[in-house]
Image (cartoon, rainbow, N blue to C red; front, side):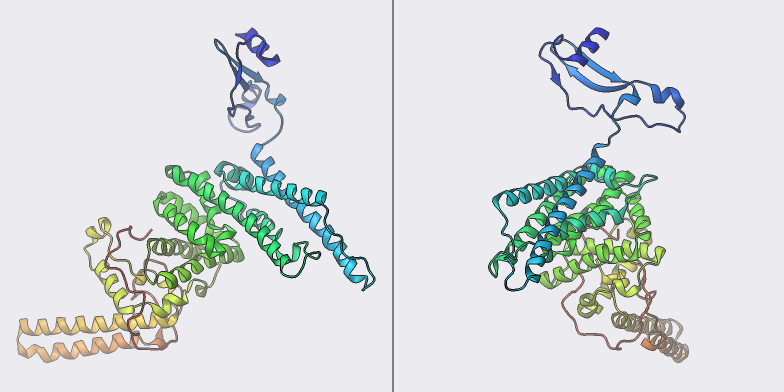
Length: 472
């Protein structure tokens, strides 16, 4: 066997029909630290495998003979290098165009790109596209490229910087279109932008396919951080892509283990405020608004997205990064059927505690008061006060019937006092406009300003039942 290994290292001459296997044996062992000591670091490492008709050879090397490389990190470096080369070419072309424009009417016209230069630009664009597919379609590559060097988590700012640099390559002001007739310049810029966006979309789609196929692995921090990266993808700001990606993200989030959701809350609590608002909160809020306007109903994607936003708002309560107004949804606040959603919430709230653990009640915006602005919360509090009034009067009449007419007037007087106190508590002038977590009751939510009466029934009534799971 030793002779076969030595021969295999030199070539396939001593092995019939050799077939080289593409197996990940070239990973170097961790150096330093740990309980292995020097002995572990000097242990031979299987570097290659050669298989033949009657023999299999394992080629080993000492750890210090292995090349110092990391495939995924090299992929990121190559992608960044391709991005910089494209940007440098565009800067050079812009400089030439600027000099020609500053020379006056007698200055030579801007250079028209030759066939060779177009071929070079096409090659550079292809290298960027290949890098995007290699880095952003693989959970392993994402974790290796953007994972923190110490501990679990992602360098979310580096991730956002790289993704934004890709999109900025093909913005209008970067395109070399001075030699083109009017109208053609914008068309070319749009084509470039569409092409790179399609490449990023296909990579994101492949990433979500991988996560969905191995949803049980989402319990590991390494996979959870890839889901974190997917939630801040810049394409979520464009509804044409968001309507395809956000529902799948919501389904992954709902199906993920509870430990994964807790990790996401922890990481979102540590996000830079501007990044949390621009890349997570605003795209999800925009998806809610556009979908509700288009469908006029509560779809599964909308309800799951609201549950995701509830966890983001919970993280914000821990990190205190954003004001409560960042989570208000104006369309929901204006169009919610307050009476219907309050009734649906009461159905769930009035269930026995044991039944609530096993049965999901109807979906209601009242379970997510952070979405409602002060006026909508004020209307909700008035509905709650009216319910309390009706319940108190009903209880007083029942007591009067049970204990005779002598106690009736006393009980009704007490009921009126309770009603007055409820109305005073629900007055808009007494309410506070702070944000609230997703699971609080209407009585626990607060509001400020706004009008008093209950609005007429509007578009977004609560569904009869939620067959897609309760609060995440």
